[in-house]
Image 1 (cartoon, helix red, strand yellow):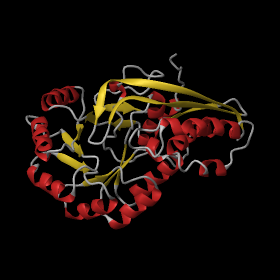
Image 2 (cartoon, rainbow, N blue to C red):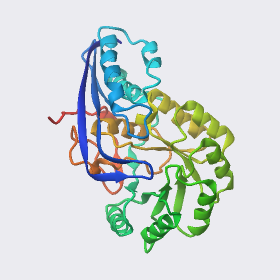
Image 3 (tube, rainbow, N blue to C red):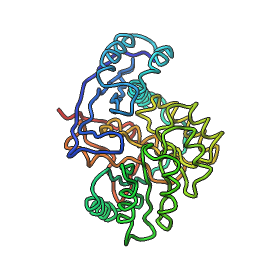
Image 4 (tube, one colour):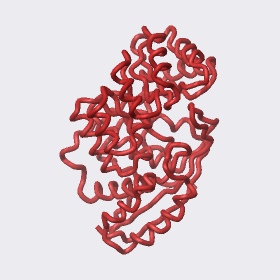
Length: 345
């Protein structure tokens, strides 16, 4: 494949109100939308948007990288050395490979070995907000059809976390389950304390309760509740280590943080071959970046909820979202992928 044209356009979209977890508060997302055109006129879009406090790189640091990449690619055949040069810039890898995957699908169709799940369950998400706000928001999410609710925890006082979780879960049916995400703010002792205090609540898993991989491995063998890995996963080596050394049953993959979409697809298959579970999770991408996450979620064989429900947090977006949430689900039609986006000026 030859790259005939390469364009990059900066964007910024604001959140209706700040979203906060135990490590960072975000008020907007900014990055670039990349548009690549091949020699046959096929075009693919991709999003480059480093996440503050989580990505290796910053928005400012990728500006010259994106510009230089355009100069290298225009008029040339794809070269694997280009992708190796981007290993320190996973968000750029994600944007480039998203655009290229779209072109490959337009040229050759879907890989016949892919098993496509057309109905994708999605979890609701509650940030670090007050107890009263969290209770109200949970009721709204349940009324909207969400069966899985992810709650951000990791406050200074763990008793505040436990109080909020108990209040949120009170008077809800047994069909509603919870995921608790501490973003590495607890230690092993605090986590095991929380496990004992939250017995009887329908908790699917504790997501990245501790910071280091070694702590996570130890905790997975001690906790009565299932443990999920998130921030401890940066690449395939991390996944292989956790598969080999831990009892972790849930692997949360953030593709726009990890980078190469092909590697993410390979990791999905690797994790599933080990009979563990994959969850695809958003890092507050625009509608263009999220479309790739919906595609990746469709490749996951389990029926668990994925972390894709972020569109409602934005005051605006750069294109109309083709994947609407209805009763906590997204319908994916492979005949309509990649979507045709009309960028909003």
